[in-house]
Every structure is written in structure tokens, then in C-alpha cells.
Length: 329
Image (cartoon, rainbow, N blue to C red; front, side, top):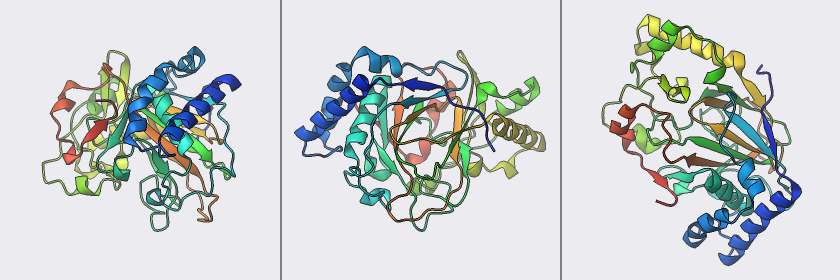
């Protein structure tokens, strides 16, 4: 089992109340719809007016852990209603926290959406769904969600992943492991820095899986100016096509990531921020009840302008035909 703890940043009560109030004000202007284009257009100015305490809490990830938990937001378990049975039926359930995540994400960078995922929403509902129990997606439950880089198949993937917890009665843990904590020798790093294998689109991107272009080979590791970064999704990497020495190095990386992994059981009102260039994340298995009380997270993806943590060669990738859309482009 993973061990260790995640760094915690505390929102004081005034800052938490300020975030909730700003979110409710925006929702009131747009009939309670967190997906209204007008609301989205007003988020940058609302985020710019937030207090220094909130901005300080949202400062860049600043430790080798590559993540932190933001704690202090209030969540009323009755007010948010039952956990949706599928993202497509969520509607505006928990909409105030959609807007809170948009505000926090905008302080940290620019929210990112995908044309082919959850109807292009900038905040996703992550809930267990009947019929998806054994997939390697956020809708699964009964299987281990393997550690991975979010949207690893795509060159336009987020720099930061933001997970806000609304409900987690069963203390289901998110797992996380940082490349800056592992111990690999120089030969293993060199092998994994070669573009040998592609990373294929995951099951959340059905159209991308049907893309007919040749899958680009990508490096697993890259030495950036800031240090070692990774791009990792073993469930969608055809490792059987790699030379034996590459598979051995990859297996060593998997073992090391498992060794340094931490388990983060989010409580309602806690927000996990993960550096998607340093940290792979997953989830432990659990038994879904589908009775309205299951684990419910909100997820946003964030790009950080000017960040240099990825190989320049990524710019030539086709992204399997999937378009990433920045909120304020």
C-alpha cells in the first residue's frame, strides 16, 4: 500500500467564504448554470479580484512532492444532493463547486477542456458509473486505476490537475507518486528518455481511439530546466513492442513510483492539486453502491503559460485528432 502524506495548505475561513460567495454571485447572474458562456467570460475578472490569501494558497507547487492539498472549503452533504450515477446526468449538481474550481484554476493558470470529453466542460464530474467498473477511467470503481499522467496521449495535456472532493464517505484514496522522489540510475534515465513507444488514447476518448494517423513515439522521461519530468500511462502503452532493456527500465520506473507513492483520501471541501509533469496519479479499488452516496469529485485541468517542462518535439504531434480548448483563448 502507498504510504506518506501530502503537503497541506489551509484556506482561512474568510478566504473560503470569499470563494463560495464569488461563486454564488456568478451563478445567480446566470440562472445557476456553471456552463453558461457568460459566466465563463466573467471568471477571469472575478478571479483577479480574489484576496491575497487565496492567491498565496494557489501559488505554484513548490516541493519535490509535486502536489498539495488545499483544505478549508465548506461542503454541505445534504445541499449538494445525491451523487450522480453518470457524468452526463449531473447537470448543475454541485454547481457552486464547479465555479470554485474554475476560480482556483484561473488563479493558477488557464482552465482546459476537451472537445471529446464530457461535452467540452471545463469542470468534470468524477463518479462511479454502472457498466464502467473495470475501465481505466475515472468512472471505474472495482479495479485499481493505474498510476498515470492525465491525458498522457496528448501534447496539449494540462500542466496541473485539480481534484475537488464533494463526497467520500468510504475514504477512497487517490494515489500519487512524483518522479522527483524516485531513484533511477543514469542508464535507466537515458533509456526512458528515448522516444521508443507511443501512448495511446484512453477509453474516455472514443473518437481518438479511431484516429488513423500513425501513433507518435514519445519519451517517458525528459530532463527539463526545472528537473526531470515524465509522461506515463502504462495501461495505454504497448510495452510488448519495446526492446527488452527498455521494458526492464520501464518496470524499474513502475516499481520506484510504487515505492514512493502516497495515498490521499480527500475529505469533502479538500482540493488536491497535482503537477501533471511530475506526478502520476491513480485510485484504489472500491465497491460502488450506486445509491447516491458514492465518492464524488469535481475535476479541472489547467495549463500554465510559458512553462518549459516538455520536449519541443511534442509540438509536432497530431494528438489523435483531439482538440484541447483553453477557456480564455
